[in-house]
Image 1 (cartoon, rainbow, N blue to C red):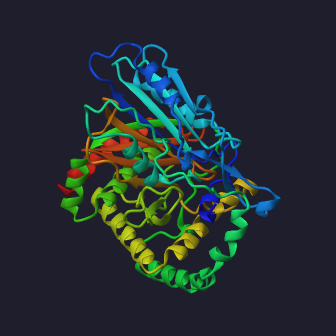
Image 2: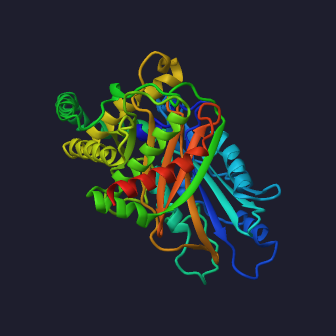
Length: 453
């Protein structure tokens, strides 16, 4: 297991589950009866041949020198991994989000491969939902979305039932066992020291430049807010879609990237939300923005290949246009810093930013130190064409992610066809009235449209 993958296992506690998820809404084909989802569930259980990613079980022992490795689980119990549920009346989106919140709150069983899939029926409009969760140690958001695309089809007439866990790989006579991690250590270490040696001076030079230009927020600059205390293991999830064209128009009018416009939309909403809670700090909030480091063509691989940028959200700025300009400048400086690093150096610098989160899980130091950042805002490009599952059209796909100790709110966004799908995952106790952020997001986008239009 790579160090970056293992980093998502080490800090996991009951209060801090480290899995990500997705909530998909499907419109079933016309003429299908009430047993449609039951039949689909039985077909999914009858699958033979599970892909290597979904056979992986986390393991460590004396033979692995105490380090986490992956081993194949040859006794997959699909009835454990695949569940069939029904919503209570009246079957609104509210009931669906409440169920999804509860499902996302529970830990995955480390004695088994770290994933679950839930088929959910009972929506009053006749649609059904699929909630899937998978441990972040297994894959990042880019891999997860590509896996979704691989299990669906662009052909509405194709009734073949695919599943993300189907084996489409050739069988090998030898599969890595626990001891392979020990054997790989010399190869992993070769060449790493020379790159890591450059991290100190490189980070200092980058920090000096960012301070001088005041174009990006440093880890120590994040103010403490109501989002940055302790968390519980209970989650609340809120979701909504916005037209992609609206954000594109804002970005084009302001001469910034689509992601800059999205961050500004979130920043304005956070400013209004914290003001409503009488908790807006004088200093601007800082967002950690994940950046994919995957090479073109490597998106289907599992594991994690993610760096990070710390973005100044300018929540101390009342004017939406100036707020957007500050965010864009901050992101530009962060990208320039990443461009000057190798992937290994980016991993290490990102690990420095994430270290307080990991140590907080063990020592509770978040009570004494300023947060390295206030929340994570992630934007993962998704499918551009409509997708179907065995004749059922995918209407929407909402991502769920990971609140952590010291960062009780996570905003993850993905695109699907002509919409941006927002998923807000928060600690149920420490992010009050999470659903109100959806209204603030719409108000923030309206403000941006007015300011730059």
